[in-house]
Length: 154
Ligand SMILES: [Zn+2]
Image (cartoon, rainbow, N blue to C red; front, side, top):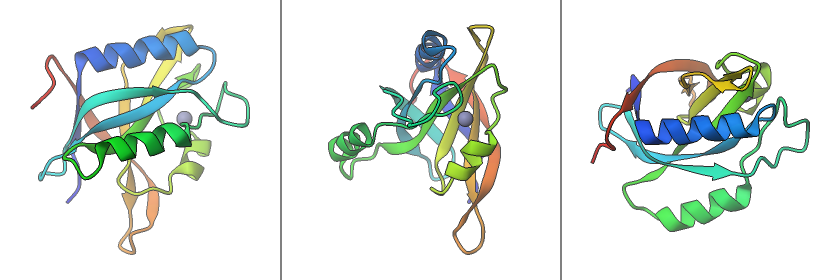
């Protein structure tokens, strides 16, 4: 079953875009919480900002705080909502996964939402998913449709 799209409430797109502009010229990042529908489509219900804890230059790298992720997983438990992916910004680069992103894409079925920031202005977000091959290994990115929705879907 291959996911075709991801739905993100307008308000969350606005919040992540603001964070991307605030962090410029560095990368912002955070986690996406939501559900995966039976159709394979994703619905985002929450975007949780994280400090960028990458060891390298934050202009072209990011890392979500492991502690934040751990705390979130504990909070969500086995409820219907789970961490379905993360977001980060690309200051001065297109909203496509970078070579570095590809190296980090070892978790299958995670959504990568990327917000390009050009001259300090956030561009519309784009979403990619880590594809898996028949052996279940992560095998690169595939772009999926992103729909901004006026209301969170119940
Ligand atoms: Zn990136």
